[in-house]
Amino acid sequence: MPLCLRIPPQKEEMIRKASKKAGKTKSAFIVEAIDEKLGIVKNREKKIRQLAGWMTHEEAEELRTSLNVFDQINEGDWP
Image (cartoon, rainbow, N blue to C red; front, top):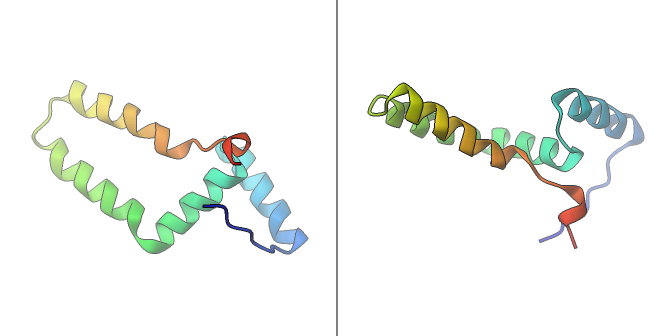
């Protein structure tokens, strides 16, 4: 579902610079900030850490790598 936000130009520039530095799109950066505010990121990390005790190092690394997809949102994919 598309969402439109009115962001002051100064904040938009800050978001642009920070997202570029993080190697993410502006959308991915904003969604990550919302997830952090809602506690979603902490919950995901907590679950992964709990599971990691039962995994081998290789399995934990594979899980970590596969979760990177959540950090990638392409602005061009939005309708």
